Length: 414
Length: 70
Image 1: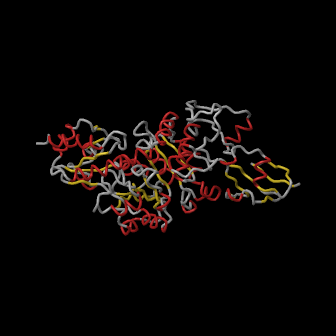
Image 2 (image 1 turned 180 degrees about the vertical axis):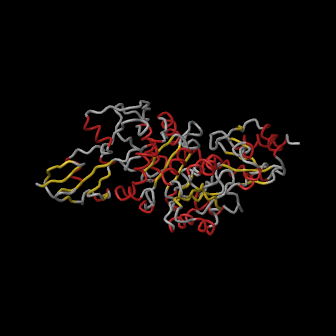
Image 3 (image 1 turned 135 degrees about the vertical axis):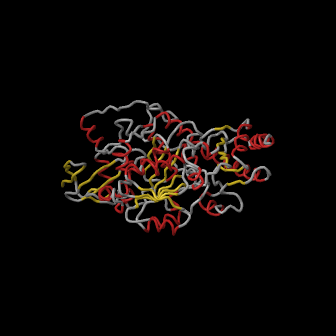
C-alpha cells in the first residue's frame, strides 16, 4: 500500500492494529472490560508484554489503541497514550518524573487547574514548583538545580496568550539534563510538532479541537523518545533495560494503570472521528480568530485585543516560526470594567457562555470570575488575569454571523 | 545448529540466523509493531535484516502497547 504524506490522509488511512473481521470502515467500539486467551501460556506472554494483544481495557483497548495509532501517525512520536482527560495527561507525566524533594520549573502563566495542581496538589506530596517567566532564559537557569525533574510550558498560555521560544527553552532544559514538557492543547498537531522545537513530551487536552469540537473528554501524552532517560533520577535504571522506551514502560505498566487514567472506548471512537476533520475545522476557527481580532480592534469600546498572531504583537514572530499561519483560535479582549464584560456577555445571542475552548461553537468566558474564582485579586493580577478581560474561543461558524452578534452586544453597552 | 534464548526459552536454530528470519520462524504476531532486544540492547528496525544472531544470544520480542512501537 502506498504511504500517504498528507496530514488528513494519514489520519484517515491509518491501518488498524489488526484487521477487522467485518472490514468496518471505522474502528468498532470495544466497550468490554476483559479479553479471552487461548491458553495460559499466551496469557503469560501477554502479561510480559511479549504478545500484541489486549487483556483488560483499563490498560489497553482496541478502540483506544486505534486512536493512539492515528496520533502516532501524525506526530511521528515513539509512543502515544490516550487518557481520560487533559488533566490526567498532566498529572500522569508529573507523577512519572517527580517525587518528594524534587522540583519542577513551570510557567507563571498556566491554565487554572494546572496551576492548582502544581501549586497545591503536588505540593502536598513534597514536590516544589518554581513558577518562572519562561520567556526569560536567565530566570529559568537561575531556578534550575540538581533536583529539577522537568520544565513545563504551555505552547500558548491560557488566557494570557503568551508564546515561549521553545527551541531556546529546550536548549536550556537539555543543558541541565531536564526534559521539556509542553501542553500543546491550543496548537494541535496540524500546526505544531513539538519534536521540531526540542519538546520531549507533549500533553494535550484532546477534549478541545481533536475530539471533533468538545464532543467528549480526553487527553494525550505524546512521547517523542528524544530524552535520554538515563539522566532522570526516576527512570535511569529502567533506561538501562528499555532505552528510549523507559518512559513509556513505566507509564503503561505502573502510573497510568494504577491511577486508573484510561480513556473510555466511546470517547476514543468520537475523538478518532473528530481527528479526521481536525485540520479543516482548526484552520477555519483560526481564520475566524484572525478576522475577529482585527474586527474587535476597530471598535472604540474595546480597550485592548490580545492575539499572538496580531501584527505588531511581541509574539507574532515566534508564533509564526512555531505555528505557521495558524497561531491558535483564541483571543482575549478588554472592556473598561467587569460590569461591562458581564453586560456584554449577557447580550450575546449566538456566541455561547461556556468554559471549554475549541468547540465548533464560539464560546466566551470571563476568566477572572470563573476559572480563577478561587484566587484572590492579588494572585489573579500576578497571573495577569484581569477583571476587565474576556476570552473568546473561536468556532467554525461563518464569520459575518459572529461579527453581527459581537456588534449587536457592543451596541447594547451603556 | 546452535541454541539461542528467545523470550526466556531455549530454541535450537541454524546459526547464524538474521533477526528477520527469526521473526518468520517464530511466527511473531504483528511484526510491524514488535520491538526487539538482543542481549539487552534494542535493535533498530532498519537493522532487522542485517543483524545476525550467534550462539547463546538472548532475544526478546517486546510490544509497547498503546500506540505500539510501530
